[in-house]
Image (cartoon, rainbow, N blue to C red; front, side, top):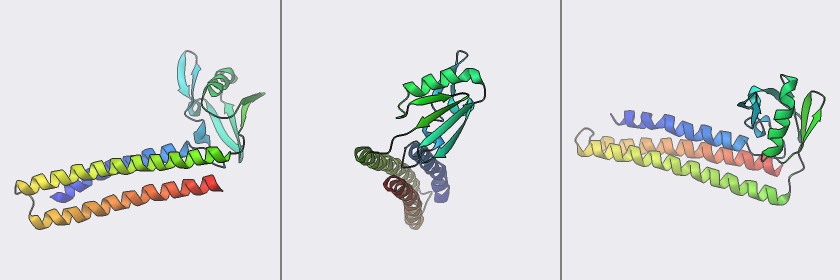
Length: 184
């Protein structure tokens, strides 16, 4: 009976990990990644599209991204949207492509990134705790109503903590991997 409650929160914890992965992917480390620009929205033909729907985005070096629009008419709109975004690189139009050269990371920027990673990890852990508390409350309510025995309540508590530990470990590993990228 209690295992259904625990199974019900596992997909929610998985969503926490997926969200954290996306947030971490957006961070620029010593190597650039297409995820830095793929969600920038460009206005084409009166509609707004993320760059990943308008162009091929590739990495040509540790600090360079090349954006190749599928249609030449997108070039100006893409260039403008990148220039207006928070990306710390100036777009350079080169015939049918846009090149973004990123400056090396400063020590201050690295420190800010490390702080940001810690904040995102803490947010993820808070959300995991929230789901644990919801499940525990539901387990206790069912025990009070006589639907779960006292022994099963404590088994459920142990299983719930194992699940929480598993997801907290994932959060920690993701943060460590990103820190290593930043410091390399």
